[in-house]
Image 1 (cartoon, rainbow, N blue to C red):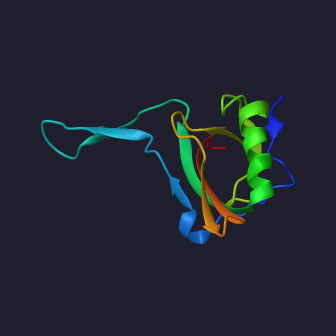
Image 2 (image 1 turned 90 degrees about the vertical axis):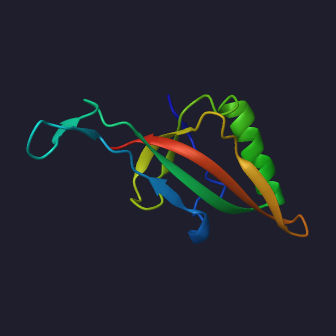
Length: 122
């Protein structure tokens, strides 16, 4: 069973903290003459990446931290989350070697948490 993103946490990313990367699913090979030939790279599309920055209060950062380290075992387990652009519930993973990065914004009461995710295109 896939865990859910905590409903008590904000999920809408900041506009300037949102980045979605699409991975190309083809490659080109040159030919002796004519246009290069394009072929599929993968039979199943690779995971796409998504970077979001979410504003949180100090208490919400504590909830997020507990959820990340205990429920998801440090980001090892997948979780369900509503994709910000598609508004569709998908399964996400935290990217390897990209742990969440909380930073204080105002007096330590307001924070911005940036995290990098992967999801399968669906």
